Length: 455
Image (tube, rainbow, N blue to C red; front, side, top):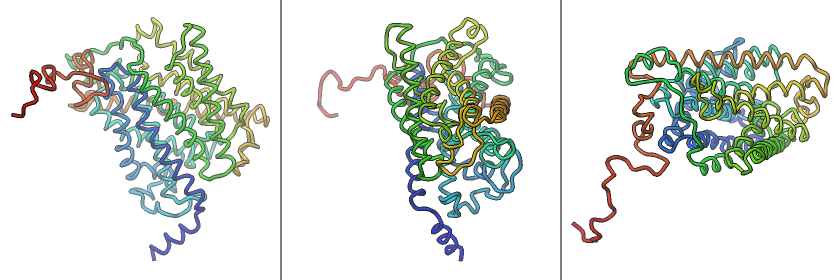
């Protein structure tokens, strides 16, 4: 009987939409480890693998957390304003029943990509100063108490989406504001720890010396993969193969392109040289800007979004180079505050200004639209409220979680001074992504005095 009901539910799903979302899900999964590659490109060469490794931990930990409790906290039936119900704990009942036109289990897997992507960006706050072991606990707790409630509030029938009517197509606040605020909270705690990291005699919170990207090739690879995969990220959010998903893909590409060329040109006019790092950051700024609005704006508007995002985020990036930032131990290694947090805030508010009812209708959505095209002034204030709640929830909640972890013996979040000075790859991992000689291999030679004789 149970098998028959699953098959019957499967027959009710649209096979083309299901195939489309399956392909988008597989493509989008590549974003998660690629975020780690991007962070390793930013990092000092002796921190390259340690900067990339948290993204791999995110894949494993988030997959388990989402199966056990994450999905039901975000999308479980019978929930309230902040949390979903517990009816789907351990994925009970999450099988072939349609969510829209696709099976629930595929909807769950696609939403898991969102959680893992946000978490991979957020743990960038640990880069170059944080230990890896506490990251595992942080990922599980953060996913459970920060991301899942925020996803429920916006998309799962909670406070922001159902009650206030925010417009957030693919995650301006749950993805970018959340990840940027989280990374900032972690970074600030590493600068001013309260508990075991502060009391340790071998740990001295300090500012990280600013440096150029450790490996620009990693940034190039990351830009290629994330740019393409993010188009599937936004297109798949429509959960159907329709004109809205096609539009979302196109506006995502255009916004990333306009952001990339704007940031690269600003850098060229300042220094007289082209910069891969600037091009990469501009593309990321464009992708951040389009995320909440991809299903609600047209091509000309997306072009302008990319330009605005590049200009605003580049100015925010300059904060970390000031004497003020150095004096107050402000560290933004992965530029998550400048691009994801500030960019996410601007993108969410601009969605309220420029969203269009007619574009949303391409996917069968009936939304009130924004200020300029549909005269809906209320939407601007709704979007601002979303930003305030999303930032506060993510920043203060994440700070509390990392502080709690730091209280546990053996879970000190700040690495010891010796490890930070010499490079975390030597002590936190057994390998490195860069060309390094480990101490036990300093005397190694491929052959002994040129002989090829076997012992």
